Length: 166
Length: 197
Image (cartoon, rainbow over all chains, first blue to last red; front, side, top):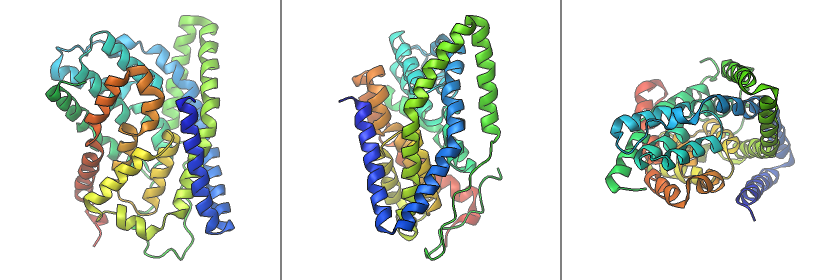
């Protein structure tokens, strides 16, 4: 069984479980939340269509070498800073982000720098903020969360340097 | 940012019907992405011709089709969670006064939450609606993004390898709670009016 299938099963299992809880509170509650969820879905689909179908083009015009260029093991904290900026501007979905990280590792990038890159990308990749987070959440929360997250790729790189891993 | 409705500290009783979440019309973020996509597609066309454009389009359409059911699942999950979670309990265990325990609960919740961004953000938004504070919600979102198993299993393990992924997660373990704590620390200083009694 593939990991994706397993995740789908867990996901829909959770939907069914909380749906059942809603139904136990009354058919009206179930109906109202079904309507609310469907409206969210209808509202969000055009954004996701644009983002998912469009991100391939954005990723195609930004060569990976630009992003992996300055992450060598001797690049030190400047390399970490570069990695954090690169993570923030990396377009596209998880395939793009992790692939660039893997290429950087294979091309001799320093593990602390690559760790900082992956964590920065996970925390505040700009395209994901715009495409996923802003449509679902209050904008004030999104920018606040991104700002608060800023120190942590550096912290992770410091830990990685200290323990000599990965 | 006018999108955020008047911030109401979670009402003590659930007597009145819950207001639906505010939906945003096409906003500037969509326009920014749209312009980026249009410019990039034009560049691809000029470099690779129409074949390059259709190749990416076909691939991404497949991706989009695969994601759609999960987006629906995420939206339903968020709506159900907002409906079944009792306001009062959430604001006690995840509210501004929930302390370290609230941050830990938020982080644990984010780590076990199934699905991708299409699940995490609707559910996080639901938590905010029913009385969680910024700190606990930050812990949840950050934990989902750094420690959550969904992305790690599906993408990071196969692409980055086991060794890197496991160490990356170990290093990330303290981050959700720290980010939540920092968020709370900054929040009460930036928005002192929202401070609970």
